[in-house]
View 1 (tube, rainbow, N blue to C red):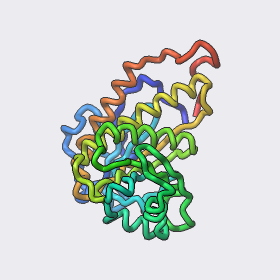
View 2 (cartoon, rainbow, N blue to C red):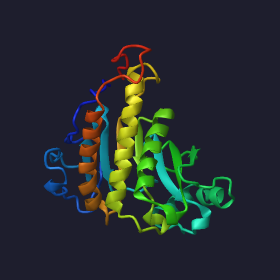
View 3 (cartoon, rainbow, N blue to C red):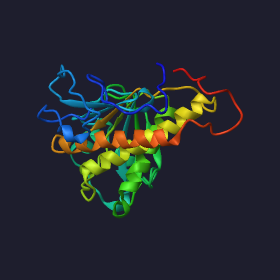
View 4 (spheres, helix red, strand yellow):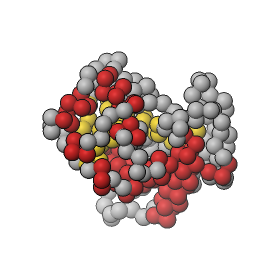
Length: 267
């Protein structure tokens, strides 16, 4: 797949694959990102989605689906540390059950401390979840959780996706399913998406200069619960637009004076 120019502005692709799904199936208000949104084709499933196109050919989709059910190369969730005392609920209970209690056991044993931005990669047993691999990103102490931390979580998720050669990524914040409600879900989604897009832009530029192996992310699903879908869609559209503007301002100057010329990466 040919990479787009780093100055490419974000637009919304009809029928594309990075979706935030609504429980009702209705499209989000046009005010979410008026110059970048176009109604897509009706979904063949009962799950509504909304897709935005981002720089470097990456499609971002908000979708109403749980982290156990979305097919992807890499499913990403977050996890507070044991000391935070955040009990699992909803999709986290289901995910932990499907993994035979691995999530709670590995954290409660202290073998994965879930410190802020600490990562753990798991290959689930066949059929346990729809994704091939599961990436857990630690959030540390729930009392210190912030939007800035969620921005960094998005960056870590994007970089780990490139490192593990995961062309399709599905991200579930899983904050509410750990009993955490202090951060507004729409704002969280905006920070995660911006962090991911800006981190991936850096990797893409390094690839064009021959300073990283060539690899393209293709699809990024942002999973949202039915009660939060509309709010997430309203924030993700502008977040993609803002990240694209930041990438425009970065320009195309190379990071260094050595290595192959720009344009050598053609994934």
